[in-house]
Length: 129
Length: 143
Image (cartoon, rainbow over all chains, first blue to last red; front, side):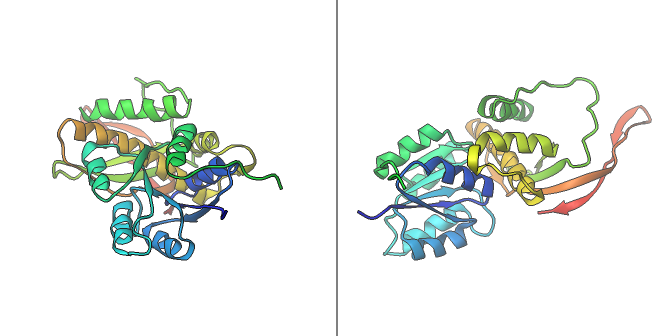
């Protein structure tokens, strides 16, 4: 069984580091990208099983990346959980229309995020080295 | 409404999410230390342009960051890291304000945070013709 790849797209390196730490006990690889443009490059390269996508980013924001993702047949169905500081109903409806599977309000609660991820991706303990 | 939303955002992020209690000061604020960050973010409401500005000492940014990333992954934040997480803090605060305003029916537009480690060259508080007056000139590196 291949090790699943989770792609974290967030302009904050501290947030990305926190996500790497959160998934450290699990048998998965967390790849990182700092904006939507870099995120699309990483999606094509790594074919992640799940994307954790920040909403508000420079260069190309989360909505912009989602729109591009849904236009590329090879990766269009990749499940996405949106990480956002703004949980306004209008914003949530907008990303839901783009097929976002779930969302988490920043700063994320680790166990809650793990629970949402595990609904989309089986998280197994990392094998002992 | 905006002031209430801002107060709630501060309590929600600093006190509830990161466990850093805070209290409102009624007196003139203490001067910011030289390593303080100034983070500015567009917050337009119902077509009226506006901005949120967060001024926060580097030590508080580092403290909050340490509550997000701990253990072996925790590393001391350099200046870029402080700007990075300071911007994220501002984003979280403004996101809370935006959600509250949107829930009350406002149309809200947000920008991305721009942070600077600013040395406040002039920080005195003035009174001019009976009115309070603050004029701050800062220098520092911006993101």
